[in-house]
Length: 458
Ligand SMILES: Cc1cc2nc3c(=O)[nH]c(=O)nc-3n(C[C@H](O)[C@H](O)[C@H](O)COP(=O)(O)OP(=O)(O)OC[C@H]3O[C@@H](n4cnc5c(N)ncnc54)[C@H](O)[C@@H]3O)c2cc1C
Ligand SMILES: NC(=O)c1ccc[n+]([C@@H]2O[C@H](COP(=O)([O-])OP(=O)(O)OC[C@H]3O[C@@H](n4cnc5c(N)ncnc54)[C@H](O)[C@@H]3O)[C@@H](O)[C@H]2O)c1
Image 1: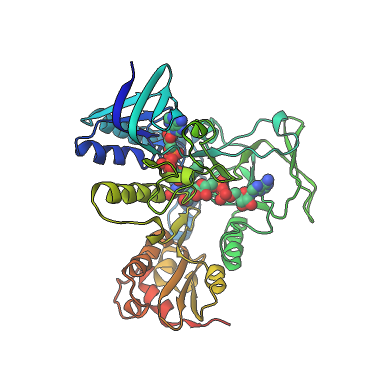
Image 2 (image 1 turned 120 degrees about the horizontal axis):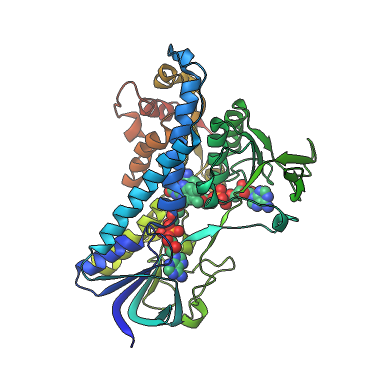
């Protein structure tokens, strides 16, 4: 017997459950299929556990600096089992509350299993076939394993297995110098590991401007993290009790010996085992599901949300996808994915908060630019906290006064940058900010000043 639904949601990540809640509230009969853990990557092996661990690492860092603040802490030690238990409580509590929410959702049939299309209107989960008029794909992604020579011969870690470490690695080699790599690199350095970051590109976080990459590198090197950029032809070998990583850098030793390797070289969508060809759903060359402005695929009635559509790679972009689909389908409110302004943070300490274009992207538009920068050493709140690393940068269009982008690498940067983001959403000129009064003493208080001090870009 085939069960029929009005709508089927595949994946209980950041978009699926909220969409299921809206759909069931209209009286629709909805099924939600999840093959692993409710909450998906963010709750179980992504944002939440990593940010809980970042908090422990920050506490260790501050404790080490205690004497600077007049706090006598003596030698500090890491109770790693406690760090991991704290992280587990954060993620398991979140997973449980998501599960309770789904279980109590009237009109929802929650099914555990792997879903695969049989046709544009049917999926298979185990032995059962389910059909629906509409499908919403929220299947997320997973870490890629690059085919480095020797990768099959050595044990390596990814963001999932990092969650199960039982001891602090003696020497963690992080391959990939972007979000995942740098967050883990700094936290494990603070937990006491030796850490080496190996990045094949010429600099860290290559999506950012060069001055930001350089400042991030400086922050990490000050803590004793070794960084090897321009590492082409990475290869792995077993070496003694540990692992050797051949890096062939232009400079430095050709091989690094470590105890653990974390591969953080990007992610790929979970679209290869979804039977998309049976439904005729188009994907791009990298496997991302092709969607239009309303996140509908080439097959009418089938939508793709979150990391699997390649239009974003964050929890907030996945949730925003849910809002866009719900607005168009249920609220008669036309919303488009291109209406959103890119924004994200990198959670090293101090964090990097970003909104809109980078300077490089802004220059590429050919517009006449105004650019302002201010080091965090000239931000009172940062001085008071003893956290003066980093800088702020803002970019505006010299002719229209439109704010184009901002970066705040500094204490509180992840929060402060969002006051700029909201003015961008409001479509107001930068003078709105220069005329605004902010609270003293905060990092945000200097945002009007940095806009006021902008100079024409050369
Ligand atoms: C280490 C790490 C740290 C991160 N930190 C941040 C951060 O600080 N801030 C931020 O914004 N983002 C962060 N991210 C990114 C964020 O986790 C993702 O962007 C977000 O989880 C994407 O949500 P999603 O709903 O698209 O997919 P996911 O959360 O991946 O959910 C997809 C779900 O679909 C299920 N599924 C897949 N295929 C099937 C199938 N065939 N049948 C049934 N179920 C299926 C999966 O099991 C999964 O539960 C981080 C990611 C990582 C790895
Ligand atoms: N703070 C956050 O919001 C946060 C945190 C973690 C992850 N994420 C999300 O997860 C996604 C994946 O993060 P990521 O850091 O794994 O990927 P990424 O795609 O951002 O970066 C991968 C890095 O690995 C390098 N690389 C690629 N192949 C390599 C190779 N063969 N050898 C050495 N280096 C190589 C790349 O040059 C790049 O610097 C991000 O797009 C991000 O959206 C977000």
